[in-house]
Length: 254
Image 1 (tube, rainbow, N blue to C red):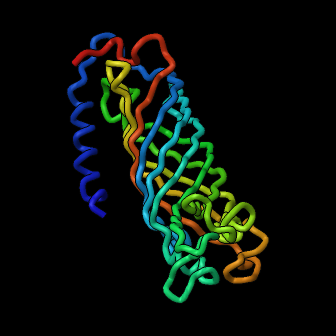
Image 2 (spheres, rainbow, N blue to C red; image 1 turned 90 degrees about the horizontal axis):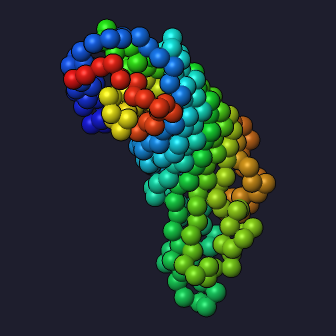
């Protein structure tokens, strides 16, 4: 993964930004509540990798950094991708001998499959300043837990296949969900400008999920017994909006 080769260089760049900060009046950490929005990219592992390829992730979050640099927050993740592995196998009982699904009017139908997933979590962590003149920015880590669900989104052009409408579609979408844990490590930076506040991190998800549908039409059986282990990991970049009237670096200059 190329990302893990360039991550140390990005971290050094961020640390160099910190090195140019000079103190004039105050070097104390302050309490900062904030909202943030993020974009990330993830690679799957374990059982997740058998069903899906890599995906993007976006969402909002809330974080409270205390004056002791403890971190408390909550986050929503919406994950999406277009790499469904062995997707045609799910429709094996609908395929003709030449590999098509026939629509209601007797012509081949256009059927697309996508990955869709949602996760909600609460987080707890700690920030470690790397500059004596900026106690509000630095390297951080968090751990957390919550809930994750995922499914195959099935889209049929003009809803032309009766076997893939309404409740029938649910027999193929593999909806699964369960409890999860997550961990992240990265760099948090509060700039002098209220517009220059960002987080760059690497985050991992581990989910223990099970199938929610009562019956799979392609296997003509209920979901397999037991729990799936779903794993995701990847980088995230977030833009923060501190809920403060003044910049957290009002006593700093560059």
